[in-house]
Image 1 (cartoon, rainbow, N blue to C red):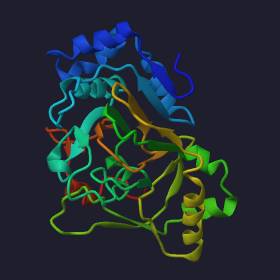
Image 2: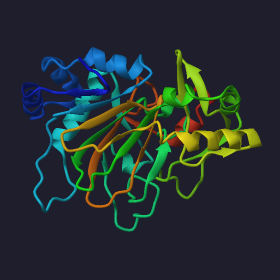
Image 3: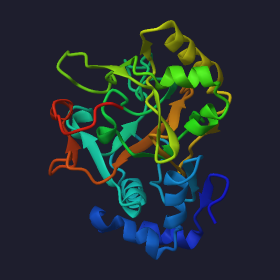
Image 4: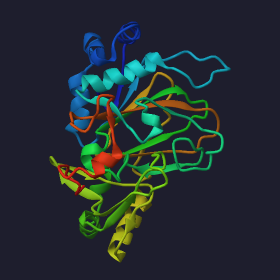
Length: 305
């Protein structure tokens, strides 16, 4: 059984996934997990029907690196991540304006970007939800991050929104539910020098019986009550976070609407692979990409949260 937010594959399951990654098309990758006896239903329940919607999966197949490794193709890890999302009936996707439209993101320090608050930096990366400046329909449903190297033993932080709101005073909740906050686009997006701001939106809402956050590294507010509410969250959210130093052969999978995530300082070598998963949507083009400009201009999308 999946228990305590962790699951370890048997060596037989691991070998089956490794063998399946050879020459198998990504569109049917999820079948490999089912064939291996992976508890997909329990994973789905954890991510979509629990108040603690994240899971650390251990003993996954992964590329073998020597001491002189450099960032490059990762067919095994990419297949495993695809299989996890495919089994959940989610589509691996990307954004036309982010990372050149890549579907699989290499997360590692980049020379010249060490001091940036991004997945290319070495400084701590504050807790956030992914791409909160976009409407919910265009944000990732699930993120999956797999370890390839973590010599730095850097911790990834993840905190379910429910851990925050269960301690939240009523006045703080009321302030966060008011449509008075502003989010700017993430720095990883290439928007030709433009800044995109989503104004007059809430940080907190309840959907399908669960609390959800729309939370950026920097959140701007328009009232003193909003500022106090933001500071209340910042003062406590790291204390209730789970810290996971994702190692080679491990993956951290979480619901992006119901969890915040961040990263500690990177003091050494580190290489993670990340994918976004999204529910069935008409926003994807034939290359599994969402166009930011088209999305922001689409009147048929709910832009309220």
